Length: 135
Image 1: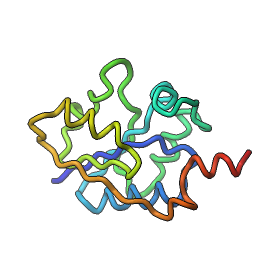
Image 2: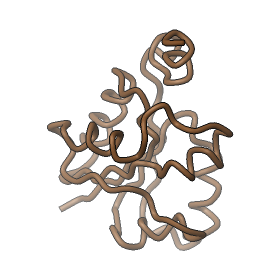
Image 3: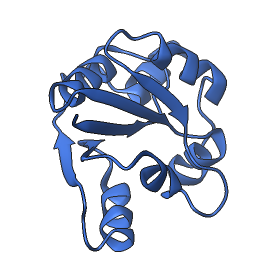
């Protein structure tokens, strides 16, 4: 069985997120989705998410193509979840550049394949754009 793990904030869940997760699921038999912690979102994006981590996790868990959804690792070791889940494929979004660097540094032997999923109408379906339109 091929396990795929996908990472994201999934704030203001939209069609771009759906596309990303559906494409990730197509790559394997089981899809595990890691939802970023509020603290991690604030560190990476410089602002708090619109929805808190429990709300974002709940929304992702309800998607039929998601087999398992978990919150990201707490503390210094944000890559621990990758070790815990032991995936065959790691999927990241087209705009998740720093995460890829961390994966390569941490897992030099690359037991898994890293796949970057392209965008789905990013001019329309991107959380930062949707947040601006809600204000």
